[in-house]
Image (cartoon, rainbow, N blue to C red; front, side, top):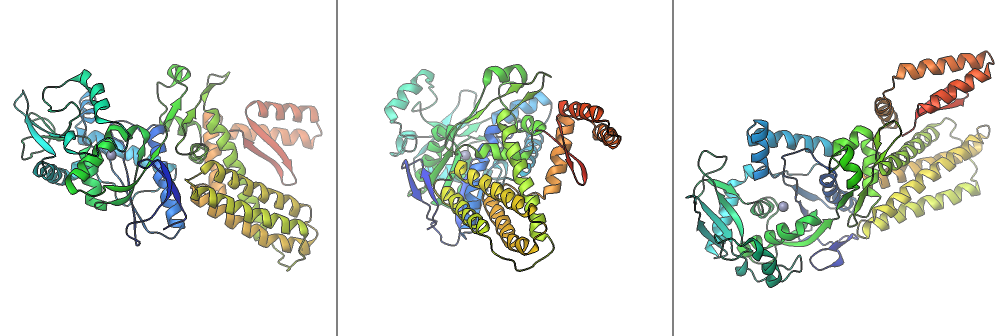
Amino acid sequence: MTRLRLYDTLSRSILPLVPAHPEEFRLYCCGPTVYDVPHVGHVRSALLPDLLVRRLRAHGLTVKYVRNLTDVDDKILARAKQRGETPPELSSKMAQVYQDTLRQLNLLTPEVEPKVSEHIPQVIALIERLLAEEAAYVQPMPGGTTDVYFAVRSFAGYGKLSRRRLDELRAGARVEKDDTKRDPLDFALWKGAPEGEWGWQSPWGWGRPGWHIECSAMSHAHLGHGFDLHTGGMDLIFPHHENEIAQSEGAFGGTFVQRWAHNGFVNVDAEKMSKSLGNFVTAADVLARNDAEGFRWFLLTVHYRGPLQFDTETLPDGRVIFPGVCEAERRTDYLYAALERLTALAESAGDAPGRTAPELAALEDQRAQAERAAEAALDDDLNTPVALAALGELARLGNELCDWADKRRRQPELLGAARPLAQALLGSLTRVGGWLGLGHTPAPTYRARTRARRLAVRQLAEADVEARLAARAQARAAKDFQRSDALRDELAALGVVVKDTPEGQRWALEV
Ligand SMILES: [Zn+2]
């Protein structure tokens, strides 16, 4: 038992997560079909298990996280033909892009990432078991090949996850009546293919597995029957997850999986998007414009079950931006600025034990309260918007403390009291950030990385900015304030914000 409560799609209620095996929590997530580059929907469906694993680990559980790669599919075959590649060449390339993208977004790598192509014997064994249980039948096809279908009427619980009745489903399916199946709802476990086409040998001849069977076979191979939690996008509830239940419970009886969790859709402002980027936003589209951590922050601003709205805006210079992600990136900047200031304060010299100040006691209370709020929100069905607000509040408290300390540079006895609070705030930011997967980059690395991208996006050279800054410093030294102000305005027009500090000019690029 953990304190974590999660919405279960099957029972339609929020329930505590109880691992069947106390030593290990077992989690399966449906991964992508790797025939193209990942889009925002793929990233979002990898985020739900990532947050769960972080939460469960924070509660002291060991988690076995399995996320499959669908590398056998007709879409892969068709796309590979178009590109003049073999299906395995295409799918391994796309799997690599997917994994690299997720790593950039600090999405946890699963313990196992099974591929269908490496589980054909397990798929065949499961189909044989379903045939033995009379939950499936072999169907010769007109072209001389043989298919195997799951007999939906053999499974009394069919429709329980999506809460659909069989007769309703049948009425819908009748439109695409298919004489090769006994029931229009029956679905393929094995699709025969002509020899010479991409495929594998099976007891029913040459062919490839149907889509749904792989997740039943691979979850069973790596997590066993009755594992703890299955996740995926809401679009997979029917038919994919309904079919997984039918296959696994049809073959092994009992309960396939204890809990189901599904993430919401990603909506794109289609009209605007179609002009510039096509009909969906790829992860690469976002990462070309925004930092990976800002992108992750944006994804967390919405509860995982709600729809994520992706808007675009075209700037006067023709650039297309994602305003929501830009706003999230500004918040990420603020987080890193607070982390950097707090680190400097925590490490600052002069460790006089110090006098306590009442303002600091109040800040300490607010710190503890914000951390508790983040923890409670995440334990309550992964309420990331509330946890993000608490992270923002901790960063704000950090800045407040640093401002307080800046005003007392000449009072070491007071600074001494500020240092333990700076350390405590850093601890809270690290913990809450860790639960959300944010704030893990060293601040100078984050600054350098975002500066490089923002320069590139604006097609600006760092040397050009530096030259203008040097000219401005010269103008200031010569007390030519008209010229120095003009240079500052020029820089501002380029998105460069200049701050004059005792150490000279500091500059940053706006998101
Ligand atoms: Zn699946």
